[in-house]
Length: 183
Image 1 (cartoon, rainbow, N blue to C red):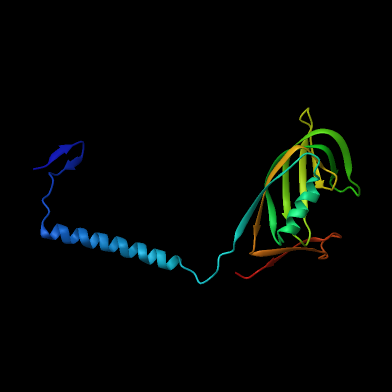
Image 2 (tube, rainbow, N blue to C red):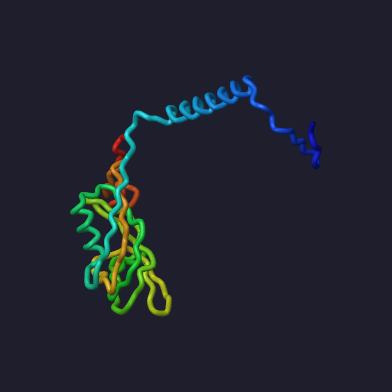
């Protein structure tokens, strides 16, 4: 007997016959085989690159760029990048776009962004800071940016690449060269 309810047919609970049990077992066997096939097909003979992280906090008076480079040398980072940074400065030293010299000032500034690549072979970092009115400036991070209260950052690294900086003929500057470590 079935009950019709808005185009949905509900059947009474079936008794488990031998055939039903066999079909259920086959269903589970197929499900397990599909999972194993998928799992085994995802297996690779390639080694996955490692990604490491370094969480650091700089304290008042420390130089932002010098401290980053000290960590890079200490940890022998060949290919890394700034994941995040929040903090403040009492002095900045930034080279603005297309300018030969850096600009500096003293006061209280929030670090609103710090980004770029780091390597023992040379780093390239950009910073954005804002003053007490919210005016924001940014450019190349230079030595001379002094921490006010803190600079909290995470630097990520990989062994998949090695970053180098060399002239490549496209610009007059040493540009990033990415060397794949063939994983």
